[in-house]
Image (cartoon, rainbow, N blue to C red; front, side, top):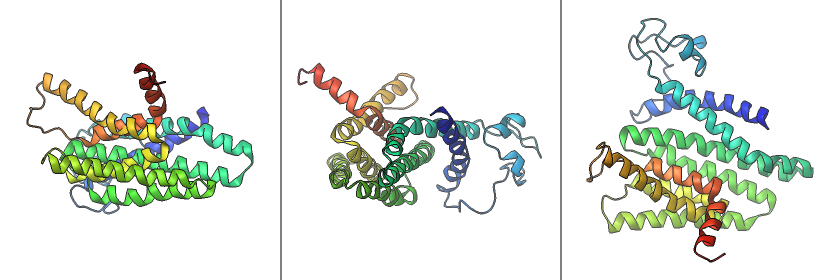
Length: 277
């Protein structure tokens, strides 16, 4: 399992390198494929040997080879963070894939593989959206809306292969419920939720609904808990004011991943705490 996780981490670092481009160019309305990456200071094109995730930044000591300008540590941090995210998702989902392989069923293997790809895709989308929201207080439709089709499509196909129509229906219900909840909050308290948050809620609800009712409950509520904790910390540090200025997307994403990975465990612990289990 460690080998598979390591390979996923290497792949994730390459995805992270691409996400650096996405985070920089998408909010500016620029193409993510052309022109090639270049030094923002001198405009020199980044050589292939200087584009190896994390390693190149360390070898160059965080400076451009041509002009010597400092290269932000954020670039290798995003690459490393995405690598760790991909490795973590792989470790989390790999047992299901190995169980499918052990069963000898081709449809089960394909379904488990599709589910793994769907979660890896969500991880990449999460990194991009969290950083863009922190930078610009926006959650671009060009990333969020296609994710409905890609993530929902992958999970729906996995359900179809397994003959698991209930999980697909639960996914749709989860997406609709999360979307409507955030829409209601946005309508009843203007300014509390942006339309980007509402659209993201629907996407996260799809994944959480697929994972189960406990994941949906913990994931949606967890976003508010994470957001509240972060707000209190930043208010205490005087980094934000009570009037706002704190993007909610990263908290929503953190809460959703908490629900996906540990929702069932947290929900059962809560039921025991209140004497219902």
